[in-house]
Length: 562
Image (tube, rainbow, N blue to C red; front, side, top):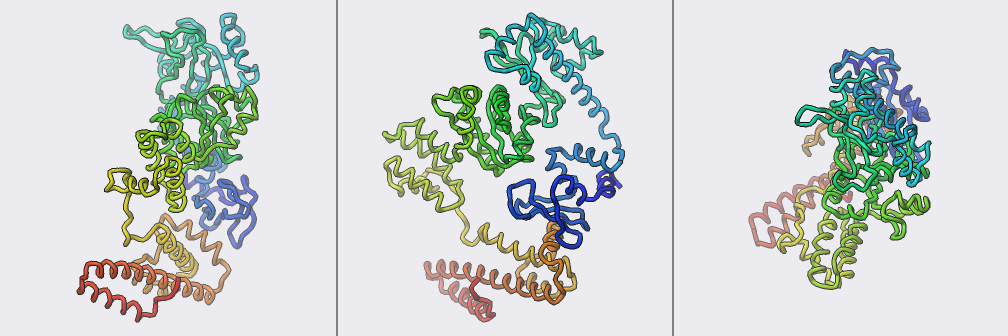
């Protein structure tokens, strides 16, 4: 038995879920609760004790008790397993102990460095420049303590000498990114004469730093970050997530800013679901991290970042990952960033978040503010930016409404924009939908019917001979794939648990009949389209063949309204 199975064998999923949620009995061996992963008023979250699994029929998430803790705590698998192992009294075997031990050691090194920078800021005369800056930015001692803000002295070896007294080696400091080795092999502190922001991972471990210069020295970078290390990967870190994740989950929204001070100021004034991406476009790793807590993002761009290529790519990636995205637009007199706005008046920042624009609306406004809609070249540029965005809208009514709005605002015809969206026009490319390919909605309906069949057969396998002939007729599997078994078990428990065999047989016959009617209607639709195509080219042999197939289908008495 491996470690994960041993842990699961010693714990009960109902007990673990019950530590987090108010669960109520929902039948023999089942419990239900309001789902913690999306907002709902009626319980759709079910726990199945016999299979030791859970599933939410509202947001379609599910899994075992380890997956549940990963979701609730925002943990990776090893962390969730370790937490549950402690509850179960299971001692986990060492896994890559050398790397694990080194990570832990580097976390200790970074934590000591953070304390050194904090202490220097608070006590040393040479840190007066930083204390004056902090006061000017409105940060008090409590905020500096909570966010571990410090100051790196403007000396070559101050941190290195201090950590030597704590038995930290030069090699460890180099691996943590705290020192630099030059071409001659000499080493010195990486951060010197800078205000220091401590960077933590999602669980509060110190993994790196951002240092800000406090003088007007244009020969050096304004900001210096910890380089890529075993602990610090910029593309996988969100500043402030360790402090914001609880409020992100509670409010079901993450507010994304550009800078550290935006985040700190927001939290200082009780807007606590705010993080920042350290000036980079959102990466896949960062988005996956956020998706543990919410699928809703409100993004605030600095004026000089909005609309640039990296920003748009970040939005595209988030949309592909099915995030609900809104863009925060600050009033013109609110300042250049959220830090300015919240310090001017917290209500301004809160209102801007509440009034964040849907991403398509923001792109529309942005396109018109950065091109002249009064001349042909400007009209073309705006259409070029927006028509591909409209093509991404799956709902035809909504898409048509946007095209109509753009035609009105550009003073051009709707037909002209539609022509530009056709592949043959050389304009916006779009994927033609094969008229004989079932739509997503059709396939979803088909799968829903199959799920009910599978659920009935899960409870009463002896009814399998009734379902097999019809499923085989339409080349459908009478058994679900292994990865769907947990879901089907919970569905069966929820829908059919207390029904007698005659009731289940009646239900199965009704679902099978609905499936036959549905599949026949789809086949009829295909035949009708094929007949129109054949008549258009006067293909008599093809017309005869389709007519024969049509009559056979009619004779089977399966043509009924769905």
